[in-house]
Image (cartoon, rainbow, N blue to C red):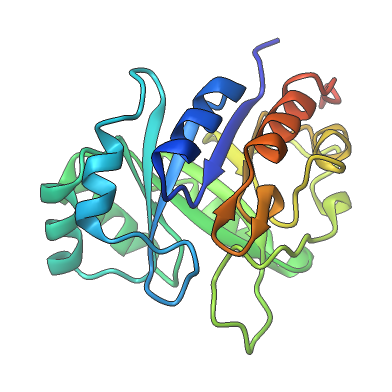
Length: 221
């Protein structure tokens, strides 16, 4: 069975990149959303992307970005994947894929079983899915809130036709249990490996990745 893929999101410094690479992450994420404490200016991200080791997938997190914003982003920063973390429709996901020729990961917020059909819907157009905790109605951020959803909603399911990633409230202390309960083969973390909002902690990144990579997943039916 293949290893767990770990995504460390919200990187803002060369030290963050080194920590993620040294820990064995498969993806690094850069946040382009001004309200987030992890937001990174495009010129800074462009320089940082050049320091990412070959083989580590560079993901740009955007929220309801229009074509002008995505044009500027893709022209400025060397990226491997676009992550759409807003209210983008399936049609918009398809448009972004066609326009930029990059794989697209669509984030889907889950609070209860009523949200699960959205996963099937977006699996028809996105290259990957990120299943995250649905933010509170008054939240400023669509993700990175340190909240988990009820992982039992995913337990024992036959999964979707696209690769998917579990997110939301994951930490070095609970990621192995989350993998065990859901059968996730990929996990995403941001606030769970921070000493303060937007400030990544290399030790927490190492602990998280070690816990994820050593977790024995449940074999789903």
